[in-house]
Image (tube, rainbow, N blue to C red; front, side, top):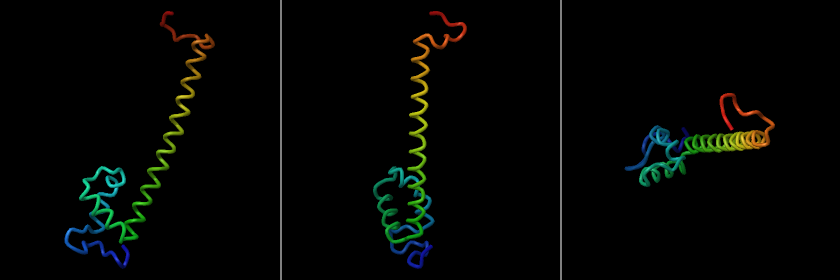
Length: 99
């Protein structure tokens, strides 16, 4: 934790590092109640250590979403090509199916 943030709540109604880190994933996913989200945001604005943790999770989430999108596009393209080849008769239908 930074010198400016001891991990303990600084003032009434403010969160310490430990509590913020419990909520960080939900905060990133924008699924916290507004009041709790505001406390997390306030803490992150004054605590570079927790803010760094949040930024790391945000970058990781974005990288995973990019990877998932790339995989999904490839899978869809392969399935479309398979369907076209199947319709053109380039690939025999599976055994046990009728026309």
